[in-house]
Length: 136
Image (tube, rainbow, N blue to C red; front, top):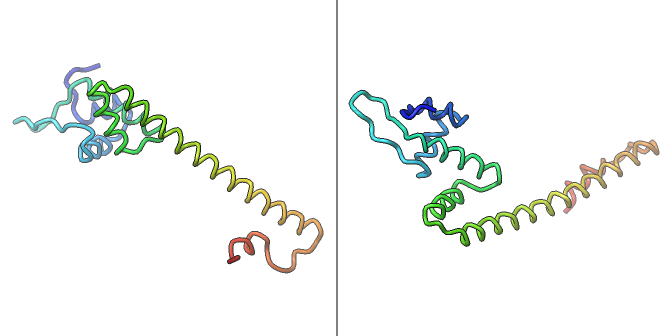
């Protein structure tokens, strides 16, 4: 890997768009290097690791604000606090999964009602799906 990275090279190495790097800088997740006389900012090789860290954390469902906290905790070597943040994220994911399962169950029941109505030939009247969505 090259040691003198322009923003384009950094984006390529980290497999992101240049605008992603700029956005992370605006959000305070990455420092923006000084602009030298020749007009091109240069990034240290460890900037690639930071971008990859951010992207991996996003894949795990962390928000950019939470990622900012993770980066601060990493610098402070605060493993216990990092674990707490990850445990909280897992709890949120479990709650979302429960909600998704309930949504799946409700939609499955509505589709079954629809299919039953079609099979019996009683397609006249209100569609069960529309009826359920319009109910008070």
